[in-house]
Image 1 (cartoon, rainbow, N blue to C red):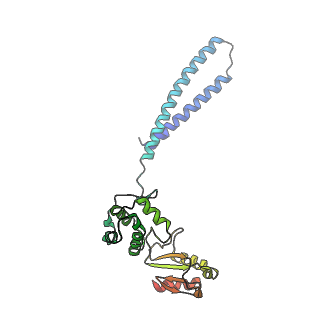
Image 2 (cartoon, helix red, strand yellow):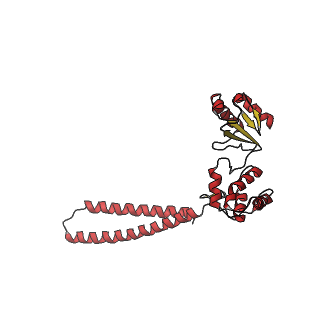
Image 3 (spheres, helix red, strand yellow):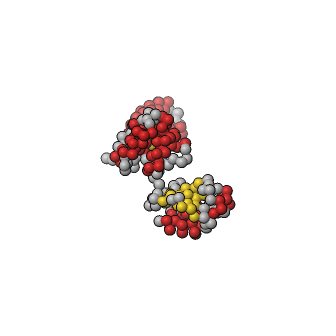
Length: 249
């Protein structure tokens, strides 16, 4: 018998026992007789019956809880969790998952193994992979004095560090004052719609484009302006911004 069916039967028995006890109480409260012997006999019979029902109720409750635990423990495993858990890096993943995995070892040998080398190492890793792969960060912790908590704290504190892969092309839309008043928000919204970037993400599902909002690109005379892989395009409208992406793809 399956755990779900067992839980359903146990729950039904428990509910029936509760109904029986409640009904017995109602009947006893309404029954009136003048014969003390009959009253005593009725009370004794009811007490025995209630005790039996109570034991059945307890057994049904235990069976229900047991089946519920089996149901909860038999769920199929979900997808793997992110390598970060509670701000720490989980161990046990080989650096062989990384392309050019030897780069991390070379960077550590070049930049040092002390805690002070954390930011230069993160900058070097992001410069090479364009984001901070979890496998690379674990390798840094294996080779240096830097702890997983320090890596997680540093990489999340500085906005320039990315923990997710970027697309083939990086699009930076300026949201400085001049670009903002010239329609930068409308351009960004249209690019997100055009690229079908999900809510809360910055990269399209095909990983062709990563869309970043930046404070200033230093091209205020071209407002509104964006850069695709470092190449500027200015005096934009939402339509011409999409055209700039098509030309770079």
